[in-house]
Amino acid sequence: MTPPRLKGRTFRAMSNSAHGQSGSATEMQFTDDDDDYVTATYAGGGVRLGQVLAKRTVDDALDMHYHAGSTSGEIRAGHGRATFAADRQGKMRMFIEWQWLTGDHSPGHSEWIEVWPGTDEPAD
View 1 (cartoon, helix red, strand yellow):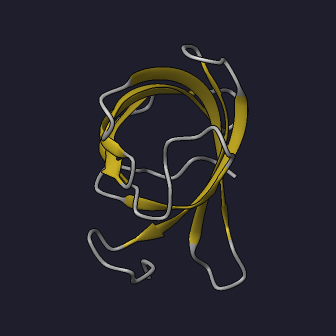
View 2 (cartoon, rainbow, N blue to C red):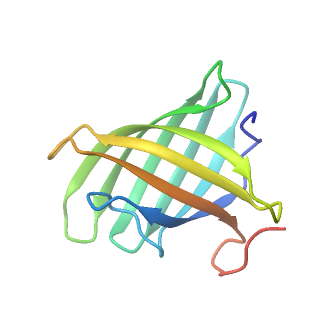
View 3 (cartoon, rainbow, N blue to C red):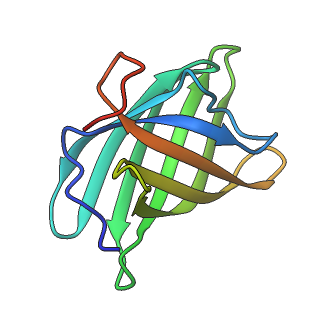
């Protein structure tokens, strides 16, 4: 699926690998989007502030690089590959295969669902 236009959309983490910082209280808000690059900020749960710079790929994914400061004062950076799909109810989902570039360099997987910012309501 071609990555949708993301500016103004918010996704909430549904699941993450054990070494990830994001959790069910983490929201990622996409702030800019053009034919090549996408930017986002994210926060919540163990993440105090995070930023994303992603490039659209030829296979309809996003090549993401991110860094975040945790609520415990740690700064970490990583990279990942995001893909998108609509579920059976038509809700947009984002799947990220990621790996830390700092710390233990562990890999992981997270799943996100589009929501209305600051609510538990999935986006229509």
